[in-house]
Every structure is written in structure tokens, then in C-alpha cells.
Image (cartoon, rainbow, N blue to C red; front, side, top):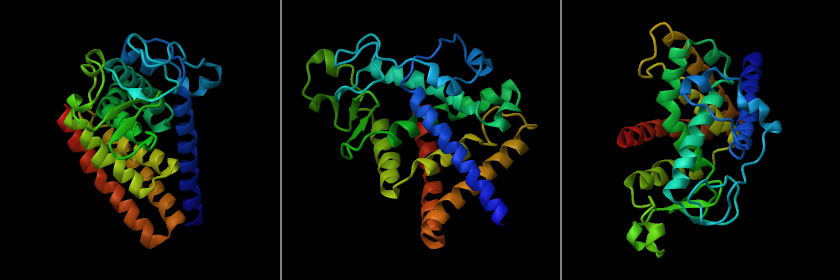
Length: 263
């Protein structure tokens, strides 16, 4: 039992380290790839972050060509900001997936199936978890771009700005209410968040995942669920830990509903 707990704790520690590398990679200039398959087959960028340069190409509020990844000030997000972060998170999801040995053992077909199934959730989860807390009605990206809950016509900016905002879309309200605020109430740690994501990523029911891969993916999911349970209960004790663990797992339904709403 002690050996099992130690093994699961090592898993959590490794996931936490990788999560830190993902945070670093979000700020960096990444080599261009033309296809998802090219990204899947290239060496993992996460382990090259010390050699990558910080993306400071453009800063300030006039982010209409290529927004910076570096925070300078809070400003209303344009579609360029949202598009840039969506693309960046998709790439980071691929690089993150490569850090799992079980993922690397899968065929490229099955690797693509898992990434395609999880990429939106990966983007959504990171967006709300890492959003600095500026109240319950605002999602803030790493570079200071923010999305408001309120409708566009209530935001007092010039027309050239507000026609590009996405704050009025119901999908963002759901992200705030059903993911961001529950995360904050649960006081989710980085380690818990990283392990939760790993458990969601290895989805044996992912669309187009081969029957041959399903047992291995199922086993990986159980491993990360066990690691998550151990991580939480070791910190909070069994009673409070079970409650937090259960609350977190119940959020998977909301994540799936938001995914279905978007697509």
C-alpha cells in the first residue's frame, strides 16, 4: 500500500513538473508546423523551453496582427487574441500529450483521436484555471486580454473594438459559471488540476479510438484517477478529500455539455 501511494505521488509530481513546462511554453515562440501530423511526429517542444525565446512581438492594446503572449495591461480581447490562444493551446495540447509514455506507444491514428477529442477541453480548462481572479464575470488570458460576461453592446468601447469582442457568446458565460467558478470554490491546486486533465485526456470512449487501444487507454485513465484521489485525500483527509474528488468528477459532465454546445 505504501509503495502504491509512493508510485501515485511520483505520477502527480511528474505531471506537476510538465504543467510548469506548459506554462513556460505558452509564452514562447514555437516552431511552425503545417499539419497536426507534423506536430505529432516532431520532437516534444516542452523539453526545449529553456532554448526558446519569449514571444514579445507586439504589446499593448492594438493587437490586430499578432498579439503578444506577455502581460502588459488588461484590455478587451479581440478575435485575434482569441484565435491566437486557441491555436497556441491546440499546439501545447499536442506537445503535452507527447510527454505520456502510454500516448507515445499508441499508433498515430489513435494519438490523433485522443488529441482531437480533448483539444477543446484542454483549451477551456487552461483558459479558466489560469485566468487571474478579476471577479466572477471576466476570463483573463495570460497576455491581459479579457472576455466579459456582459453583452457586447454594454461594453463601452469604440465600434472597431467591440465588433471583435466575444463576451456576449453564451459559451463564455457557461465556462465562467460551470468551470471557472467551481474551480475557484474547490481551491484546486496545480497538481490536482494537472492530474485531473491527464485523467480526462485518456478517454477510452474517444471518437475514432481503435478497439485495440481502448484497454490501454482505460488503464491509463484509472491510473490518473487513482493518483488524483490520492493527491486530494493525502492533503485533506478522507472525508473532505472524497467530497472534493467527487465534486471535481461531477464537473466532467459540464465540460462535455460545453463541448457539445460549441460543436
